Image 1 (cartoon, rainbow, N blue to C red):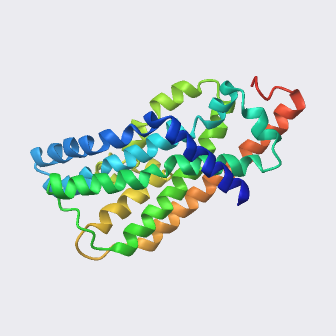
Image 2 (cartoon, one colour):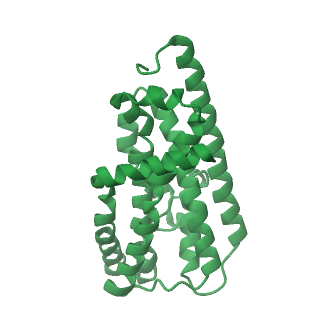
Length: 255
């Protein structure tokens, strides 16, 4: 936990020196307005409220993909990776603390998109099931950080990491059902969404602001937690493999 805390505090300092990392927070409400108007114009006013909150997930995934996913590569390019690896603290713990800090602005993204939807767009985003909403948000932040850890490790091994990161946004938005429910996607695509934690989280978010009882809330929460834990275990395993390999070959800064 000491290593995680140290990595978390270290990454927070980057926001002070590189405020451009927070650009998604400026455009999230604008996307919310666009999505809400699209739904209303097409006669789906029932989806306008949930659609106006979709930019929260877009911002969260952006932070995970482009801030958290490139942490190790950025350290390599900056020439600081050797110092992090040689430190007595666990490398995986430090990296997880840093990626956790990269998704922290997601809380701000949710607050601003909700406020904009409620008071500027007058969308029906009243929270009716606080337990489901708070629980899903907390687990979503954890799953996002764990997924960012996995991507940070995988990007080191992948030869086309830049291409993947540039093209891995909108496909996950679709599979995650963040704009429209997964049930409205083509039948052949729906099973793929079950392995994307965003799909479970988005359903819980919509349920949190919907009238009536929440269908199977525990299942959704458990699935977000399980998918996040799987990503965390996989990311830690990949990081260990990388360290073993580069220590054997002496290519820490070159791989």
